[in-house]
Length: 292
Image 1: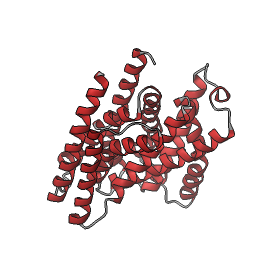
Image 2: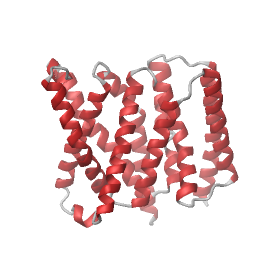
Image 3: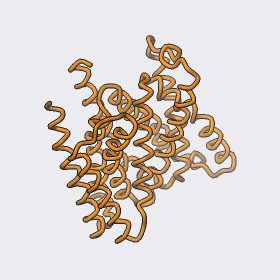
Image 4: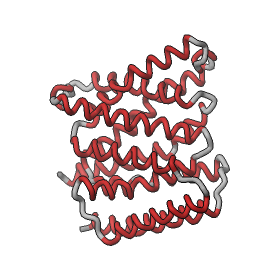
């Protein structure tokens, strides 16, 4: 791969994670809407956005990039994974768990390293091993002291980590793959929205134009960073992609603490400290690898 393509991959990664880091501000604007309904709108409008985008790019044809039935079935699986990730994230943000979400995406880079080691035969050196151990220690301490297993954090970390792994292994065109994923998910979203609207339980029945607009834009807001993520995954390693992800949880963390004033307990401080130290070690090691 050329140096220019590698730089493009880094740029795509930084852009997508910056957008994701600001997501809590967007979803809290519609926290009066049920989380499942928001998810359904994300699925529906993301599909329409991607189909429109795909049809507008002349040189792109599905048959040129996705030729096997097994690839379509794999994209069904990745579509389910990313839908689960979206739903869990929206629910967490709108129910006051921004810090748990942030923790999940801090853990995710290390999950990427672990998955890369297990399934892509990417070597795990001493620094990466130490970073993983520190992250595990932080999660264990939080679980024991706080009294609750951080299921939201780990659910977000592993669902998105496995999604990234499968996308990396498939090696498909990012636009084509995301278009198929959203097409798979669209029927369920459309049925759900139609059902609750017909029973008068939808946010669409309120005739609140701002809510309508925000739900409509959820498609573009969702698809654009995912598209950037897919393009980044085509060009850079899963480990480097994990390194760039620090931008997103840092944004979420700052928003949770300073904008929405979520409680930041001693258990949070110790847990995050373990993970931050692990990430510092991992970052220094990654910079050394990039320089080499």
